[in-house]
Image (cartoon, rainbow, N blue to C red; front, top):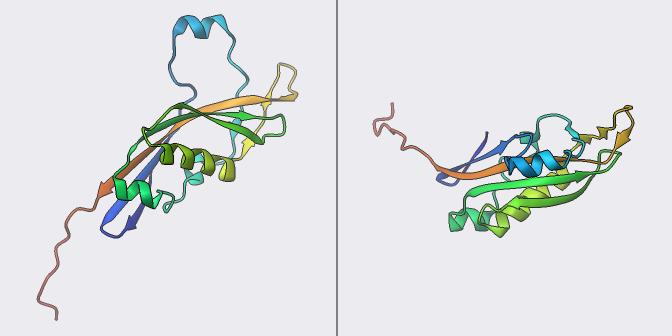
Length: 141
């Protein structure tokens, strides 16, 4: 979880790391899964504490963006696909922008160990959190 104080609102943005998003079992059994690339480092670090878009924060926009990344045989992100929208185009676009700028991957490998194009799928939860009231003592020494 990434938290940052902005004015009187603390933001919390959590990268939900999931191997795959559940789908139809029949569809998953019919087609083999594409090779998976491996993130380098902690993917949550790709979303800085100040990454919450001000316009989305001001509008109170929250939600979970599920995405899939197409990654080439060199580990470069070639495309970010929104699988499930957060309900905010701005949060979805920011998710992909931050992934493309900050994401780093080891490429997927085929059965003989050669690097190949692959995918990686996960989700980013955008959530605004109100600060709890703090006690201030009027009597200062």
